[in-house]
Length: 340
Image (cartoon, rainbow, N blue to C red; front, side, top):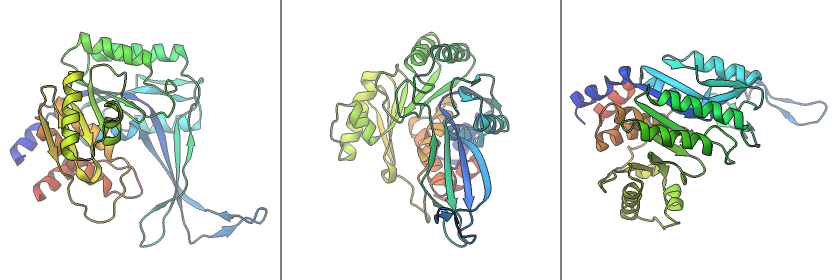
């Protein structure tokens, strides 16, 4: 992609309106100073002294952080939090982000706030080291009234945005935001607004999703394709093309160090290898950076290859941000692509 085309695409971001529907969580980092070692008098166990706590939106919020970093003009967040301290922190973090509209973000006493608590040991001159994570999740079915409220917001927003991202982050089906009822609302909205770009990602499975753009990794593509073995790039490209044709929408397959493959519904495919690493890496958040950049680029009129270039560069930037779930700004993308 030449510099002129890069500017043409990214300058469109300020005028984009994107809805992000999914499981927002609170990423809470507990920064531990290992030089302040103690041992509990009562239990004899080591004590980790937390010297700083920082919080930011996670899960679907990681996609949000990347859309904000791209200076997308208007971002509508659709999801829920509990009426608890973690929910207060999450809503405050969402409201502080530029361009974010939280009118569709629901506070409910029927759920607890999805939270990842990440103890992080910060030793001098060493990369951050994450200890065992502490998670707070909902393990019961999302109440019907809450599902209906989310579905209504989806239908309302569909005619007011240029693109919509679905992020299903829960471990157990029907316990989060992207339930069957919400997917049905997406299906109806997409049929009513055929120009609306909808991109979906799920940590469990994309099986049963309506005809929307699908983003997945190699293992998820295999499961969607009846466990077809995908050992070579050729097999992955062929399988992705078949899925895109049968689904009637593009699909994207992330391949870690092997890059990313995109397939259009006419069978056209593109593969871009990953950029070389430039030191220590942390892969957390790379897939979400890809989702954000694919959505923004495609909504701004990028070609398949251009969208892959931007998403690939964003992933490269994010994996080099240690001790946090990172994001990639237009400025950083410009610098990296010019350096290639």
